[in-house]
Figure (spheres, rainbow, N blue to C red):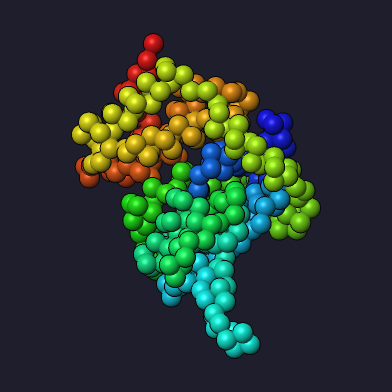
Length: 305
């Protein structure tokens, strides 16, 4: 399956130029059965990445623009009275899909943001007292504008913790931007993208990722990192057991993408900033949590021998 994954990276890279590393991170998040938060400025390609990934995997796709006047029923669905049958009929919301793109999630109020909590954690939603399962696989890709922009509401910690990874695409380099300016990577290219795998292939990959071997040596290193965040004065709050499971799942997915059926400490080091960064807060005097600062802190945790 590693060749199929590389084929998918090649296909998506035709649309999202110069971002092969970020595309691999997004795929690792999906294959680990997680949800992805992309935080960046408008116009970077966040929405296009989500659409292209869904098209490549041949999955059902829904997009929803979050705004300040959005209600939970707009996301989940609601019952509407049908005069012909004299009864209420449930009309499902856009969350009933396989890849759900939540555009600018932090422009909605916390009440609307919380409508996704059950869906992201349990793969189901409870509406009007009835629990309704979502489709499998179910993958949320949310985009978020930087909080300093006007009209945004910060995501609470419980919502942030539902995202397996938070990544940033960043501006393209000069070569990639020149290709964009000359017409490469346009939306027209997306229409030529082929399905890289069938639904069964996607589910099989997710199952294979869950079975990637994690040795006692690796688990000891992971526990050392968790303990370090809980005891170090550099962090306000340490990583939870759920965060530990997220790190393990993401490490397995990264190892799989690299063609291995076992994890190495290097896999954990690679995905650590993207999986732990949005779950941690530094003490005020240490400044904003950047990837470089995070890796500098975690370099103090030795790899077990």
